[in-house]
Image 1 (cartoon, helix red, strand yellow):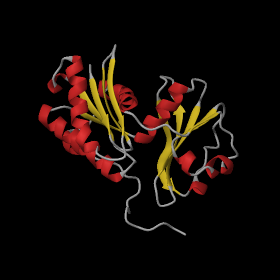
Image 2 (cartoon, helix red, strand yellow):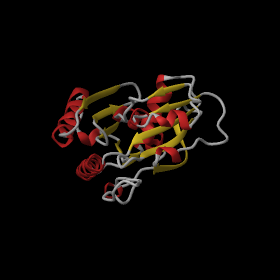
Image 3 (cartoon, rainbow, N blue to C red):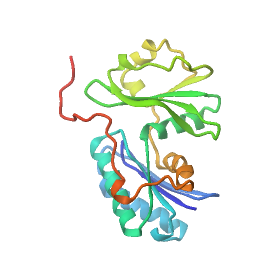
Image 4 (cartoon, rainbow, N blue to C red):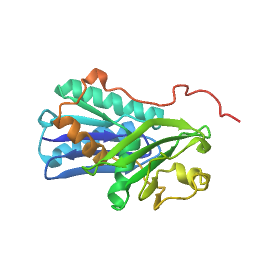
Length: 229
């Protein structure tokens, strides 16, 4: 099986083609212009593999939360490609992709708190355990709120890590949570390769959606409200 993954939810624009024995990736850090790059990056990984889109087993995309324009772009590209090649789709949380990077980079971690800057003086945040398969497993819901509203599960024991740019933008997070982190990886962004890895078991199990169901997840519904004082 091969999974083609893409992500445009943050300034990290990326795509990956994952098979059982290889991964081909393209990544670009850019504040804007994701729409101008993502399709050519997808073409590049397919060309390097020597296959066409119809030879891919499934598509995966970063469904958010993240920048609203970027999340919408990823969903629309995934929908278009899936319709064109009649491919199943696996939407993957961008927060889980960051957690997966953290687990892969620090093998001793048992748990990871991910916080991403959500603007409006808020963060997107979620908690993840390392599964028995080594993959990030969500604990509780994905949230958006003030830094002071972030909390760790009471049941967590062992090595706890923190990841995501929310910790750089809101350094008070480290203090309010008592600094009990084995590591703080505050520059990690989601990437397509982790999205592909997280999508792999779902695709194998047939836990996919059709193209029209490949929808973005914003977490915050009201995107135009002003910051709370």
